[in-house]
Image 1 (cartoon, rainbow over the protein chains, first blue to last red):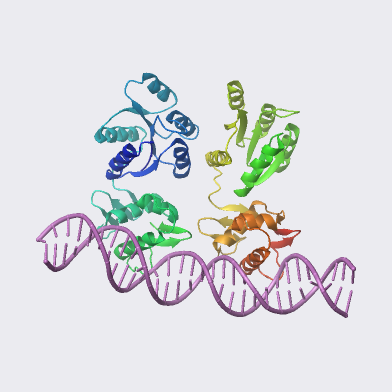
Image 2: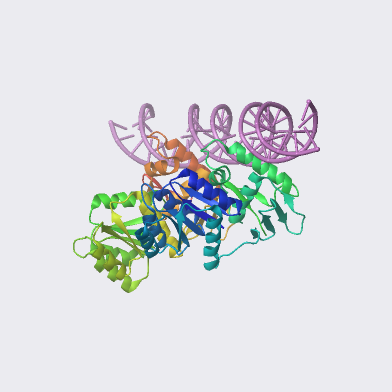
Length: 223
Length: 223
DNA sequence: TGGTCGTGTAACCGGTTTGTCACCCGGTCC
DNA sequence: GGACCGGGTGACAAACCGGTTACACGACCA
């Protein structure tokens, strides 16, 4: 379940991202409006959390842009008391709103409610084919095998690959998703992580059947 | 993927055409309404970009004419603030609009979104005639043959040629597209790349049937 | 205090890809 | 004929890439 979080306040953004990640969501972050739209296009998330005040392009504009393309649930973050903002947001097609400040727990509850309403509820372990991930237990189960414990990074890598099961995922994107930024050069990190993960989950790590090298990245074979 | 661009402003038209060509689209240009309709009939493009203000026959009329024949995605170019234009365009069956001025990147994103919505995603096999390219797998398939693996550069070259299938593409443009700049003198690179690609995809590399040498460049025969 | 674990970094290997050079050939122009 | 030009070819070296081993470092815990 992918969630796009757009907010120019880095602290708040990270808090939200942290909360959601903890609960097993895959989070994509954007620091301003244009970045939000761009990430939206590229990642097609299942839900969007939008702050109204953002430089470049405010939340209304982003919401409008998103609504022009999709009916994905959108949650707006508003400042208490700005009633007209609220009205405007809902008019533009936002599905819910949250007054700042809010508690992580509230955010989570509202997001779950939104997803349920959208019929995308999915609190069972993230799974595809014979691979299933247990985010609570930090473990993965392949077919009928025993669950294998994973580290934080391994889990995130697998989560990304699983979200695009069967399709190759660009190294660059994996770097961004797993480590959070890093420009080029850090291929080594990814190389290592893949290597360590293969040692854990492949029957023959020298001839990977699950986590395959693909053009410009890696992909997870789930069949 | 063919795109018809109709705008009476030659500079803007060329800018759009350039942007799209860079991204691998085949662009057909029209400078006024009647030409747009004519080209539309002849080329049956996959998407149309229409300026509203055009001499002879304005964008609305062209849009109407197109809608009478086809449901191809249409994107209108509007002037910011002319709300009634916008309403009218969408009423006539346009699928999206863009306020001038806009950035090439935005245009590209919106066009991709439109194509995606229309279910013509070009991310999956890019194809023309008997040649089809798989960007994810880095491979090309000719007719009923087995897929042939390509390197990054070979893929880019083929992608460019495929986007202009049947038409000769200037060496200079290929150099820019594949290597991203480099002044002159680098003909040798292209020569070598073509040579290597021919070894891979031609039945008789000495007598190329697919990747032919053409005036000032190369072209891909797809029939 | 010492061990284990997770992570980051460096170095090496073997294979592939790419850049470069030297040379061939056929056509053209003087 | 001979110089020149532009594309095609073969050969080789440099760069790159993924996989792998080894090691360093900090966190954590007994």
